[in-house]
Amino acid sequence: MKRILCFAFCCFFVELVAAQSSFQFAQISDLHIGSNNADEDLRRTVKDINANPDIRFVIASGDITEFGADAEIKLAKQILDSLNKPWYIVPGNHDDNWSESGTNTFNRIFGNEVFAFSYGGIHFLGANCGPNMKMSPGQVPYGNIVWLDSVLATIPAREPIIFVDHYPLDSSLNNWYEIADRLKKHNIQLYMCGHGHQNHKYDFEGIPGIMGRSNLRAKDSIGGYNIITIENGTATYRERKPGLETKKAWATVALKDHHLDTDTRRWPRPSYAVNERYPQVKEIWRYQDSSDIGNGFVLYKNRIITPDSRGRVLAIDPGANRVVWRFVTGGKIYAAPAIEKNSVVIPSTDGTVYCLNADNGSLRWSAATGKSIVATPVIKNGTVFVGSSEGAFRAFRLSDGKAIWEYDAVKNFVKAVPLYTEGKLIFGSWGNELYALNSKTGKAEWVFHDGYGNRMLSPASCLPVAAFGRIFIVAPDRYMTVLDAASGKLIWKHRWSEHWVRESMGLSADKKLVFAKTMQGHLVGIDTRSDSAVVAWKTDNVFNYELNPSTITERKGRVYAFSDKGVIAAFDRKTGATLWMHKVANCLVHDLQFINDRKIAVTTMDGKVVILQVSN
Image (cartoon, rainbow, N blue to C red; front, top):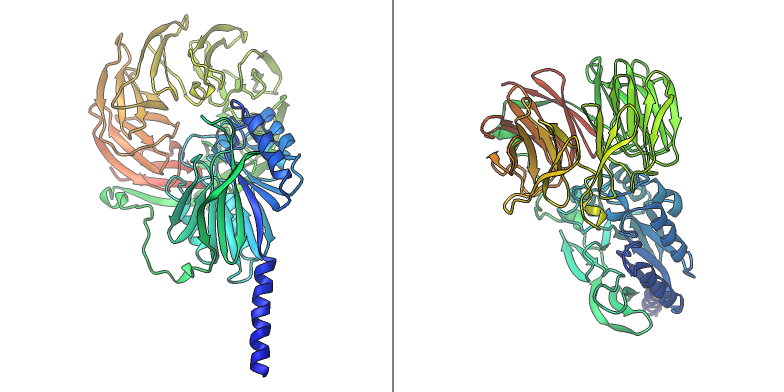
């Protein structure tokens, strides 16, 4: 009788737990507020969710806005605030890559870029995955990985987890394996994402995955979202057309412990085998920051001075293997520093330009602007030149930070370092324009419009080069464009069908070749004096498909370039032949500088500072 009562009690307990964990929630994704009809589509969805009392909460899985603009983020928040139930949100690549605030506005308006909560006995975790401020594959920021470790450490063993990110858990996220390996040590039952705009079911190394559709209507008359029902150990997905119908279930996922911590299967991981092929290159020192590094660095007295995305400026001494000094700003930093003598200038997304003493990190002066600054400055003849996010470009006196002039007619915002050439500053903006300002007066000598209406084709991340009275740019339109430096008039414009150039370029020491990196993984050398697009040489495909908007440099007959997968390569200047390759990480390399002829320093997006030694 006791056994029967015990069995009956156990059955009742199991049924009670199942009943308690039966609930519904909604996934909305890829809202793209700022694009056509997106706000109308979201308002319709919010109204529909509010009318459904069975939906307990809402998860928004990234690409909340089209361009990451402050106004778009505020509008999205205003609409989502009309939900009558809790909602949880993470950003996507559209929110992060083109952010005029350096991703600060998303954090400020929504309160965070990660979330963690429990419902129905399930732990729901969500994280940002970039890419932050530079075109590349997605990447969960290193700081968010540190956060994830801390949260996972608080979850009791084998309690169920559902993880939410914008990107799928595959190689489109360049550190997917770091997330997968962490989750597989726990009871991960489902991975939810957006990004692809379509409903899709996946298997991510044994982790069940679901991609939810975009809320946008696309070619339909209205948009849609997914309602997920958790019941009897199963997650059932049904697409909802707001105000019209809930469709039949299109996916079910068994929510169970897959015990992936004991899985002996081998899964693909980034290969560093290329380093064995070129033994003349060795890594001799490495530093790992506690957050991402958002851009390049400067060298000063055997120190590497670099900002990070926590808003700090660090002076690192590789010889002593320590941080010599730190300076903390009030916002993330995605600009690279500039240096003249012992004055380091670094803008922050807190809207301030800082000038620091390079010896000890003390503040010399600061200059506040009206908005965040994500653009890198240039210093020439004792003057600091830098763009900002409120449509302005400024000149400051290096000695004391006094404003010299301001040009306030920039369309949209400035991101990249300007080119200083023959008394002019050449730079692009995310408003489809390229500007040539007089460095003494700040007056526009010419403005070139690229002819596009889509601002994502703007020459904003490109670092222009100048040779023989010409300005060369490459942009997301995949063309090389050549302008007359004096007038801004178009000389020629070309798009190669077999190699698409995009945002990564440089100039040879003799100025006879302009280098450009192609999306297909090659480098091309283009004759700067020709009146048409003449390719002098093309390298082998050493990088594969990639998007890193980095500077290509030449030093003593060698051309150096690097990728969004952590590969650095050296090529022969005359022929384009590959001399060596070395992989330092599996993410974007920001910058490469020479400590001496044999030592090279680089920084990577995931917070690494690396020194390489080249033997020949």
